[in-house]
Figure 1 (cartoon, rainbow, N blue to C red):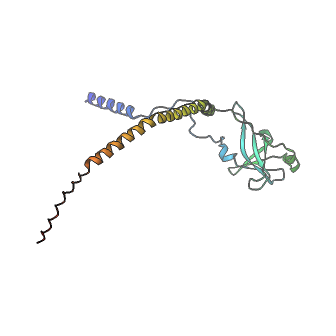
Figure 2 (spheres, rainbow, N blue to C red; figure 1 turned 30 degrees about the vertical axis):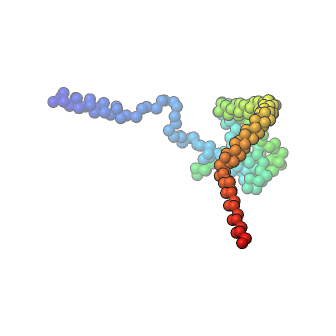
Length: 222
């Protein structure tokens, strides 16, 4: 009985192991954020920034991150109306003041007076490094353009030879035509003569007229 139970337990263990999901590698994935962590999209991107007087002066549009993946500042859009004539300025992360009340994050920039914002330089965004895919696409376009240019160049170079061959073919045709004309005319005359001869031969023969009957003799006078 114990052997039967042990065998059943072993089968159940094997079945469980067979359907078990593979274990994820450690130190790679994050299941959820902790209480002291937040997502930039939820608490930073799009958040309104207030000035020293408590009025809204702009909103956070992007983060400035170093190669070491450290956030050093934010890009803030300020001024303008509905995105028109908006000025973008970069702000040091240390210059911002973060406060949380009732689960909501409040961001302010104490140094952002109107004069300071007017004097602040517009943020200049540098072009990011091109990815391997972008470089491959550019190389493909470059090769396509070179191939097209080479093909067009070959066509242009071949045009004189094509024109010369066309001219020679035209001349050869005209010469062949001139050479064939006398033979054609002779053949035409021969055919016409044969037709005329056949036409004459096919005509019915005209019968010769019958000789005239002699006139009757005059009666003798008594």
